[in-house]
Structures are given as C-alpha cells and as structure tokens.
Length: 110
Image (cartoon, rainbow, N blue to C red):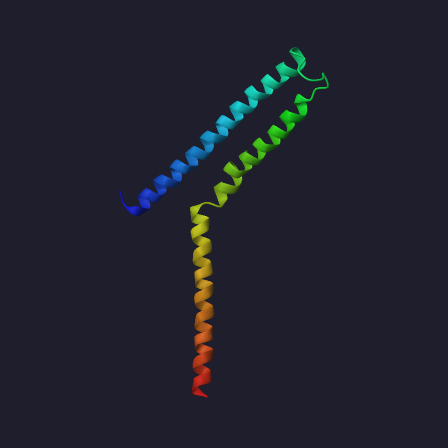
C-alpha cells in the first residue's frame, strides 16, 4: 500500500470513528432522556417541576453541535481542504519572495 492509499485509508477510518461516536452519543441521549423522565415524573426524584426538560434540552444542544462538527464542519474542512489552503499560502509566499527578489535586483542594478 503506497503512501497516498494509506492516507486515504486513515482518513476513512477517522471519519468512520467520528460517525460511530456520534451514533453512540445519539443512543446515549435517547436512553439518558428516558432515564431522566422516569426519574423525575414517575419516581418523583427532585421537585415535580419537570427539571429533566432543561437537562435534555442542554444535552440536545450539545448533540446538535456534535452533529454539525461531524457532518458539516469536518466534511468540508478535511485533509483536502487543508492541503489546498497550505498550497495556496505557499504559492502566495513564493510570489512575495519573487517580488522582493526582483526589487532587490533592480536596486542593485541602479
């Protein structure tokens, strides 16, 4: 397996791990929400003021952030994006260096 195939394999493996953790998070959210509901409403744990709704709401917000990271942010800002950005910046720096070299050579010839 050459270096490029190895890199593709590693990126795919990391992506699968991200999705797997997100699915575990979702299952844990569902089970945890059910547990909090049962503890508050059926077992009368804490005051019967439906505090579990706030806990589940915060948990859902965290899950949504996790979902956005996995399916939106990491999908577009992956290794290819990173590589393109690096190449763009390197080319920009090389252009600046060439411009400076030409200015210096012009100054020297005067």
